[in-house]
Length: 279
Image: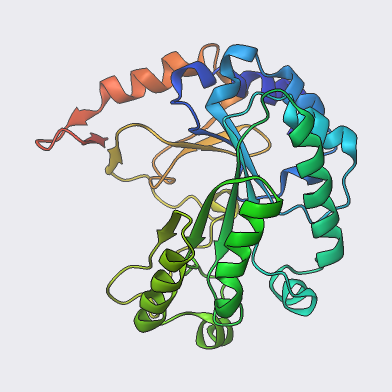
């Protein structure tokens, strides 16, 4: 993303709830060469709106973490799926656990010296291969790496997940019960995102990079309030869960907040009051 596009995008932040502005979630933010400069472009009044998710797989420096510690962000998510070197490399393609742990240690040291660093949240995907070590990951992140919250998630069953991976790695319903009991026993509160009750292993959703998918015909869609947006690096904005309804270049909008609020005002309310119909 260019600086111009980022500045325009940040104009939306005042209209977003605290912690509701995803600076980066589907893609690794540290791959952007100007991540820290972009953090510095965010007005102080909008920083509590924002967070990002990182896998810490690239070697980072103390200066990076110092910028993060002073950023004023709502929180930072850290993906943490294994403490075993071989398993880490298998679950995190091209990842090296020793690099990841070195980043964790350095980040914890820097954040410990900062006046008011963002809380660190750790997200662990539950697989058959890391099932036994998940409670240890929770304990280690609390004891060593400043975890403010741990979340255990199921794998979104999207198109790029192979059948082989599903068969070998997805947990079954009984596994989630066992895992819940083990996590409750360690004494740390943990958020657990369970898979859908029905048809999880057979259900396949579209791949998450909606911007590479064909747009298809624009049809009448229901939009859930509050309005969610996804914005691509080039500034293309789409409506979350209604990606085919509208695509607009955010750089072309003089007042992005006014534009999207007007979109909601033009839509037709439904009886439940929670969704609107966009023609």
